[in-house]
Image (cartoon, helix red, strand yellow):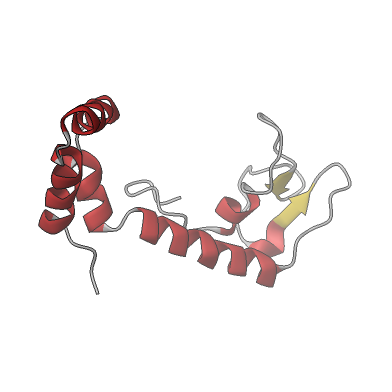
Length: 120
């Protein structure tokens, strides 16, 4: 992952999505793990009898991860995330709206969506 943004940027990020157990690292780059070996597909070694995924499948998975990251971190989504009232406040608004036949909750959500619209 990119050290500044956290965006996936390497085949290792794709390998890390394969559901290995916590603390389990069934792959490395070179016979001695990661020591001094360039982290490229040609140096990828799978341990414990695991099959080595194809380079194309890892590159495809990386593109999918990047697209998901880009969608999840779109500027309007980040802005909305911090502008919405807390979940507790939203639940309280919904309760009072139900008791008083008001639209406070819907109005507050609509205001955030209007302030930070979805592009396109």
